[in-house]
Structure formats: structure tokens, C-alpha cells
Image (cartoon, rainbow, N blue to C red; front, top):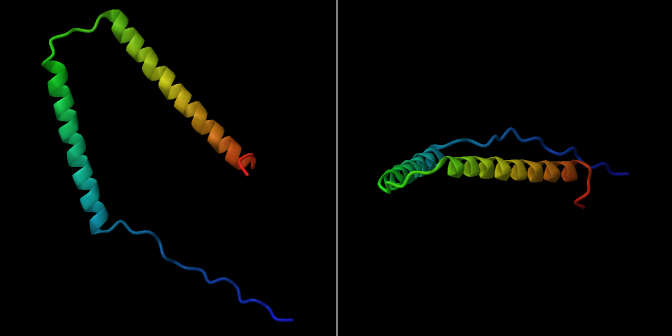
Length: 85
């Protein structure tokens, strides 16, 4: 009876090299430019948001975040209990 050799363990860990740092810096720059443009466009509109508008915007943000968190929770629950196989 022939035994198979044990699988080799590799010590290779993913590294965060120069290319990754360049990518992070470029994407961070794009994010900063987008945020600057959004703030500039928002402040140049001269349209104030009423109290009701702020209330409904906050409610929308909370509701959307809750739905996203709930769906991600269901994904993890399904994965751990093998419902997705």
C-alpha cells in the first residue's frame, strides 16, 4: 500500500508591495477630488434642506444600512449552516 506524501505547507503571505501602494494613493486621490467636487457642487446650489428633508434623509440612510447589514448577516448565516450548497 502506497502512502501519499503530506501536502507541503507554504509560508507565502500576500505582500503589500509598491504597486499596491501606488494603487491606494491613486484611488485616494480620486476619492479626494470627488469629495471636493461634491462639496463644491452642494455648497453652490443655495438650496437649503428643510427639517423634514433632513429627517427623511437620515431615515433613508439608517434603513439602507440596516437592510445591507441584515442581508450580509443572512449571507454569513447561510454560509456557516451550509444552506447555499
